Image (tube, rainbow, N blue to C red; front, side, top):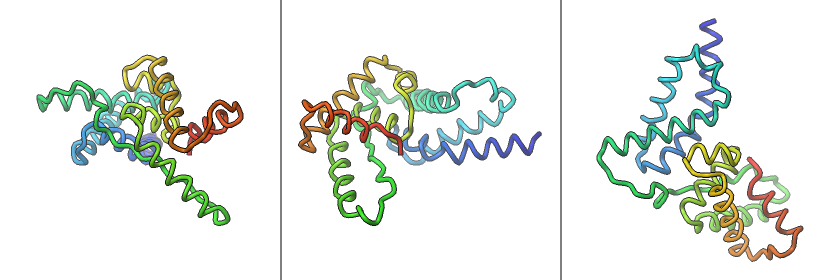
Length: 187
């Protein structure tokens, strides 16, 4: 039983550590603090591994735990942060490039990364959580402590700004759907 617990825990750790670390980094801007926060979350999770089966959505649980720990860490350092998203940095992962389309895809992802970098900070974080981390709108809203409508609005802003930056006319339904699919599909 302990061996199975260890294997399950190791799998969770390997699967979520990097994503949670990047999420924490986007808010605290300190590798050491971000790593400490995420490791602490996993330490606490190991301590109550018997209760793990009762957690219905482990991904949301972990992200919310990181968010809450970040808030606690910021308060502990007596920093006043009115808008945690103001200076977050998020990059879009390039994915796997096929040899035949490497040059075209490299340029496309370069342009897409530049477009994402130019997004308002809140849009970048929401975009990353949905596209790269595969969270749904409700999970993102819970993690960030905002409404689903706010998430939807931020995604709409992101799509509009990225389309503008990439010179894509969203008045065409086919182009709109294609861009939305490209932007929101998980890697």
